[in-house]
Length: 391
Image 1: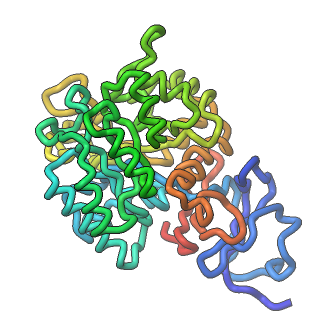
Image 2: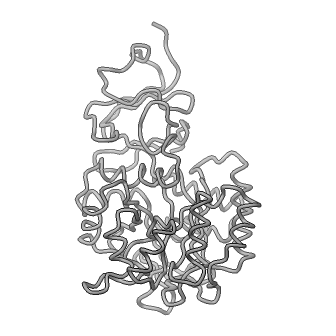
Image 3: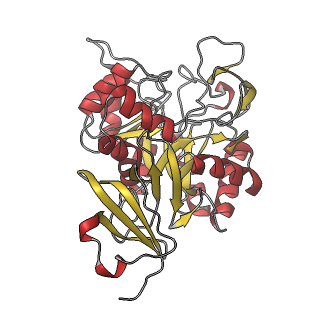
């Protein structure tokens, strides 16, 4: 029996449908070659090799963040290779193995720059978190619900812009947040749906009926559910009511105990049971940094006790300082989700929305080795991206 090269990770292995208490994951040449019970480990791996380390704790698929603006003091709106390395290195250390670089409502020239920089970054070896594409959060949003977006740059949905971006950077834009009640929004949603781009509602004044019309046009996602949208009322369900009640809408949630009460997250989790709940951070540049003054896009932000607010305003949250591992722990420890359920919310569900679930998002043989090793308290002990141990 000859020795094989690679690495074995032992622990409670989280797989689709459950947790293998005495499990092992075998990694070789960037891929998972086995994920299952220790007793069924293929014979060729049942040898001691110097890279194998027996451990306790959980082994889960790497997290996928489809809504993140920055971190480590940097913002995707102002980022070259060095800044992108800092952002991806920080979030990788917190368990994020794939992400969408998320832009802000900004002048078209600024968005052009983000697309150019991310496209160029993707052509290189991405040493940390893999940037799968770009999420445009705006500028096609409602001036009534700007949140921490600069209302000066809000415009109505523009299909010509989308066509030009898609022609220059095919497949780069993966998600667009817009207000579905705005003029031209339904045409834009239909265009996005036809081109494989996730049309998502957010920063919107839409009624329940307007959201349903958008869903018929192809909209399938709600951005940071409950935040920056018309709330649920028993006679006017609003945007929130549509997200809660329509199973076709995938709901993002910021699980930090600041943006949404845990009871509301629990209600959402009980309703969104068809792989349609997605953990996000909405993290801005202050993630991983001390309290102080920052910016989100071109707006000033003050961070105090880890809470980011638009400077001078007492009721305008400006993104978050959340990380995926903290959100994951919050879902388990505070909201009450099982580790397996939280794993789907943080990994498989976003992978499915990005149409990359065939290669990542779960621990299964044949998929790329995007793997996290956690201790029993759900603290990160190791991070592998495409089989390379990064942390």
